Length: 190
Length: 190
Image 1 (tube, rainbow over the protein chains, first blue to last red):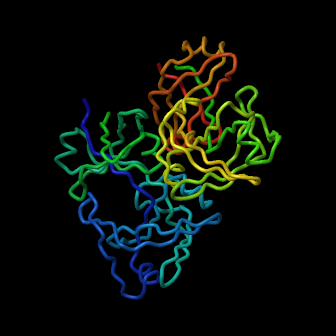
Image 2: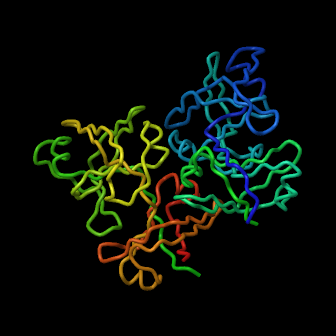
Image 3: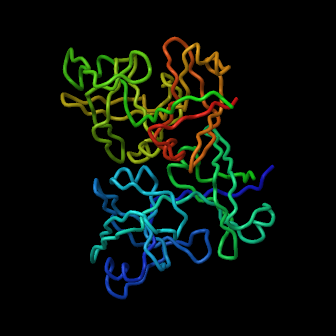
């Protein structure tokens, strides 16, 4: 039996850099925590923005805090296609060569020239969990999810270290393809 | 190496029974073929309808012909959730106990009390293909799709016989989760 990790379904969301937050929500604005997420120090914010692509708009998309060095929009492929953006599958923070979009907040708009990605599916593990699972940061593993739509996801990135906490991150397309409910669990297969 | 079959991505669509076609498009109306699909005798029609759920509307959803004994709406889970319908994963034609929705056509509306499903992923094979693949109608197999988002879909239904032609049917959630382009191919794993 492989090591088991709870599944966190990532709905479309974005991270903002400080100057973009200022433009969208007003100079000196600070994000309001709605609730913490599993990864240490991160949270779902109360704030939402509209994401505009060549073919449409995704309205009211949640911002995750805290602010980051660079704005990053994370969509499922279904979302990206719906607004006409051909987004690549990328690891968080690897934004070179990615497409942009327009962001609309209550106080202003930002025209991004890059930053839209489909997140490369990954599993967060703290050092103890990684040791127990027998994997290390940057390993590539497979994950099996049981159920009516049982699936094995290959090419899953391990992100292990002090800033991580046991959780598989897959997007809504992947979660739906696997029939994941809120209590889904994945087994690491090496 | 397992037997390889091309992947057909099913976008949301519906099949109509005769009296519903009459209500939506007018008495005695006949569907207009836009183009044949891979499965023998079936086609994408020119006609489109709006699909309405408790939380929203999917506009301009394509009808597949010919007419069938019973109206059936096939959505991806992402689509179903977007309009507030909790649709079950079902084999085509197994509509007992499924939720309904409202259909709006140019000439009228139909309030379905059942018929909305998420199609159980399946592989169509003609008798020769089934023999070559070493499977038979109603078998359950796994399918592996290669690529950046390589995946193994377990619990895939085989539909084999004279009315079928080699093609894997997965929905847009599954296709996106597997990163499938238009030329995707799946390998049958028994």
